[in-house]
Length: 298
Image (cartoon, rainbow, N blue to C red; front, top):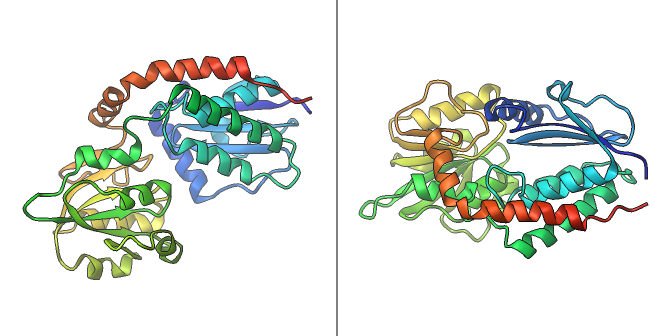
């Protein structure tokens, strides 16, 4: 196995706002698969793993923290996939995000085995220490939005990815129906088939779907660019719009409407920290366990 070098920018080197903006830009214009490296980017990190000297495909990583060695790369990827290095210890989505980064590797890529082994080690660590978040990103709507018990409300979910689907499938108490606005409704309709209270639409059909009734909104998308940003703005500032919880990695709007909370607001981060305080020790134990149990293939 060739030596591995990796560079990274995460919440130890950058602000969450800067990382979120870089992640959003990469989602809007993803680089092509590389023959030498693997790019992993989430709201909290951007990382480049390579088996040969090559520049990262994003300027956000130039001149950032750099480390070398197959063992250290395997340990880091496993710790990330297990949720040991996450803002929410044991978050549920990160394992899938590392897996999807690996799936973007070209066939026969030398990093394939490293990624596969890291994911397997991460799964073992999660089970060993019960490293599953008490309150995850998809649970936040239940803490900041609750429908009226006397007047059932609608919930508008903006997005079509893992987080949006999780919120739509298990909306907070008190919402009688969910409307999901996304760019690609056809695929999402298949994924939510069987959820009778969920309606999936593009923006032009949003008004009809909401039927002139009041609604609260969860923004659960990463790519809010160009014309779509205006669609989002109109949706959450309309006369029937109520509370807004923005889980986008950067605020969807620069001018915030009333009753608007963003993921990185101090009160939201405080709720997450308090809810998951008991997981911090498990995350540390899992990190140490991964370091002790990693096996490097030769």
